[in-house]
Image 1 (spheres, rainbow, N blue to C red):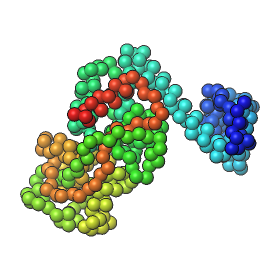
Image 2 (tube, rainbow, N blue to C red):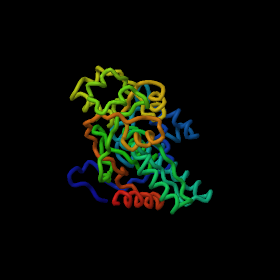
Image 3 (cartoon, rainbow, N blue to C red):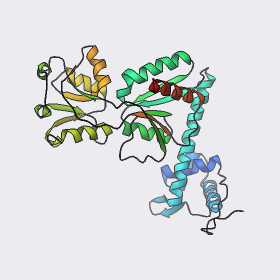
Image 4 (cartoon, helix red, strand yellow):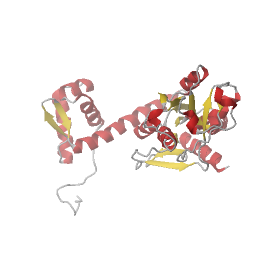
Length: 315
């Protein structure tokens, strides 16, 4: 039996925890009473209490405190709940992956991506990967980095093509940056009165209604920082959405303008749905990259897609 010489109060032994105890931790976190947790587990309250007592005895710490409004996790309990959630998610995804394999698939890759990589990088890489691995099932979730990364951390995604928000705790993530920074464009409907100009200053856009990402997204933060060099963003009439469909629909039906990645602007401009306004937008965006979880072993199909992405970024 090995003890920590720096603190003899704790006896560090390999933690043996049963699947029923993992279920109990998750149930207590959700329901906060032993009775309801036991019902959720389809067991009796005395049995659930014994499971908790055994775990606390093994760790030699108290995991929950009984309060008038129910059971509250201690600091030790919060740590164990966090890992219990991760275990549960991993088993759920393992079950889903096994189901896909049983149907004849040769793997499952769950991708999160910001909209800027979809028209060019993600599309070309997916087509190449699908041709080489036609029996690998692929799912794509498109959103903003601040909404996709919690899904990655929780285990609902295998990788994210995006950027790390400044306010996010990055210690559990790895990012492999793309070589070239992302360019941004201001778009409007074809026939917009400003589209005829050869050059537009930012000060000319204060009277326009802007469609921007919700507050908190990395792109919104950078756009506001660029605009505030010329005028306060509080002066603007802003409609918030992260939906590209909503953005293009609003632009098509009005004189609203928006800021989107250059590749997205070119894609929609090619089909005559938007026009790119001649605006010099001094936005300094952190490079996009492929983001994965640290200390996470990837399935062979995920590793193959990561190699596909790396090969494309090297060319």
